[in-house]
Length: 113
Image 1 (spheres, one colour):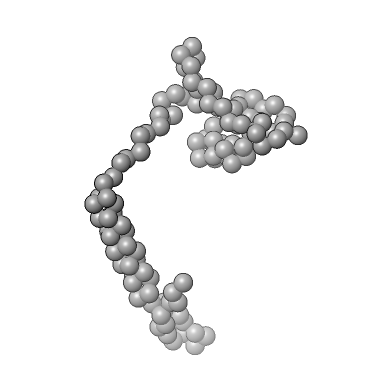
Image 2: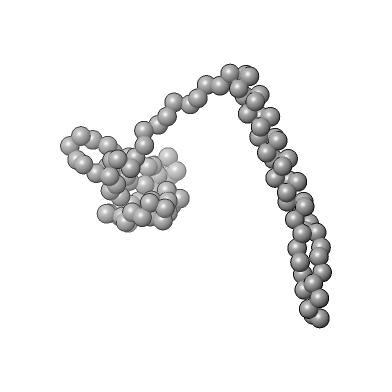
């Protein structure tokens, strides 16, 4: 059995081959590669590791994080809190029509979480 340190994910991008190779022990990564990206393993090692091939164009390089000023951060916080308040108000005002056994509709407010 391999330790967590030995269970690694390797992404190999080299100039000699066109597709990139991804080797992963992580079941979460394997499910993502197979389910979301539609890849099939090209090789499994019998210990839980699988290798996949993917076109290099589908791998995005890492982005530099944006550096926001204090003023910009304050504006974003204000906008986010306002949008959360609006969505909470919308969910509290929803009503549901429920038909009883005698088929007369009754209106009741939905409960908020």
